[in-house]
Image (cartoon, rainbow, N blue to C red; front, side):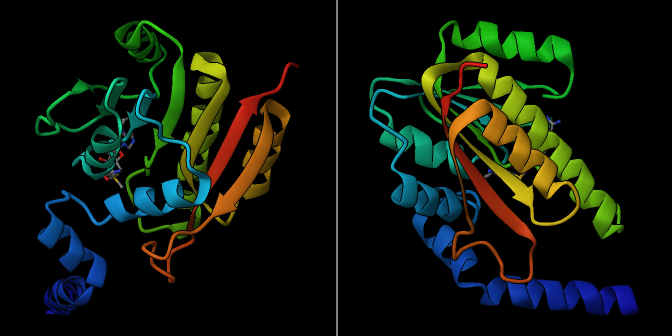
Length: 205
Ligand SMILES: C[S@@+](CC[C@H](N)C(=O)[O-])C[C@H]1O[C@@H](n2cnc3c(N)ncnc32)[C@H](O)[C@@H]1O
């Protein structure tokens, strides 16, 4: 009964959510699409010739936004789950955390990338602290991978949680990138600890 009530409240709040409605009306597959639109408005990193790797891409909102802005570049999307085809977007179904899969991603773009995006979130366990640690670990992996695959002027935009290990990830980013900023889009729910890190320009170590 309690679970049923919880599900009902979730469905009601989802349908009252303005970004959920906006996504339905504009044809975006997720309300997350508006987070990338806001992030790009703030930091202006997606160019018409960008090569972009979108990690944790399903159901495809961020990839839709990126591919609409990119005319002569490449969008490579990666997820553990299936993703319906988006015209002009390459897709790999794999676990980003496995080393052999990182190689597959690099081979699939066959050039250095301009942008690495990650909206990856670890599956929720019910333990908020553990979920925070696991998602921030994904963000740390993204930063290390990005250092390897990006052009010197490249950009990483990744989800992370403002909680345990946030400072560790921030320090890792500052060690590897010249500019590091944080931004929480309006479309990211206030109640969520989610924020986004924007890093630009690889530091020579
Ligand atoms: C919040 S959703 C992304 C939403 C997406 N940005 C959009 O706009 O539609 C997070 C995604 O990260 C993916 N993910 C989590 N861990 C992953 C991993 N290790 N490798 C690949 N994908 C992963 C999940 O399968 C999930 O689809």
